Image (cartoon, rainbow, N blue to C red; front, side, top):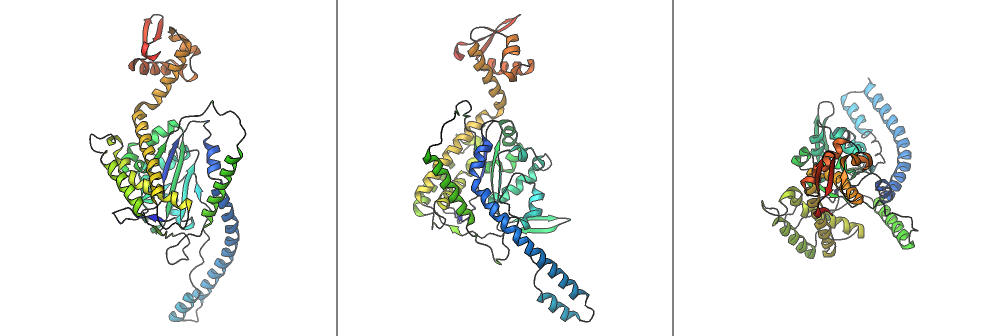
Length: 420
């Protein structure tokens, strides 16, 4: 995929995006993800068939090459110069075909770097079960910072360099990684609130969405023909993009070292981008409205340029530049992500407690009048039928002035006028 050059900086950036969607169990994360990634799965199936044939051919050639190499090495009748000449004559060792993986659901930093020689140059960490990644080996206390550092390098488009005692020195150029993880609220609170990931800067690269649940409103209805046609068009179009031959770094026999062409930001788009950049910059000061998300806001303009690049290439893979309309659309999306993170940050410290307390508040409103504490434990919301959970939720409601205690023995509660 091409790389945009940021206006006025002369720096090229990948179009890769890191995204996280927060949604509860039952909100159809998997169903949505299956539809969105269908063309990718189709492409993986195509690559799998090609890989099977290529691997069979490689095994034969590799065995023949190894046998010829041993024959030359063990030939006692030839001298050094002739041996060198013959070894050079058989050429380099046949390279194992690249694995037909485009999407993975979980990675570790060591696992990714160790397997990079055999992986596609462009990968996606996509999963509807985000806890596989956020709660897995890559995100343990010992590994969290290492994983974050690797992912940040991948987002930046930097060469990935590693020195290991067993594997030696590894340098991987021209690699791209995109991420979309879907997480349940509990896992999201731990992942998005991690001090280690915040300090390292990984979370400032993520575009986070937490849409309101549609549970309770998703009644069956026939799919309109135009909607079905649009989904089919989307799948076919993305499959064509995935089938496009990538540009490679020389020497081109290294088939997973990408060399994306530059995608300039056009004059009109550049003016739009600079205006957005300066507007965001003016809001991130110590007393500014974006001070709470300064790290994220500092990367907002770059993320917007990446989004504009993605919109441009999806529209036309041969587009000569990013136009003004694509950039304006990207600015609108980026403004939404800024507001969404502000909303989530405002609720983050007490997110789980607030959600539980609101469930109790809704139940109290349905009950009406004065309610005994014992009734909450026996007839209240299912998650609040323990004394500890009920007490915790009541503390939140009392602190916010929504509930008052009118009797201690027996213990009874009443909604305040402001909560009615």
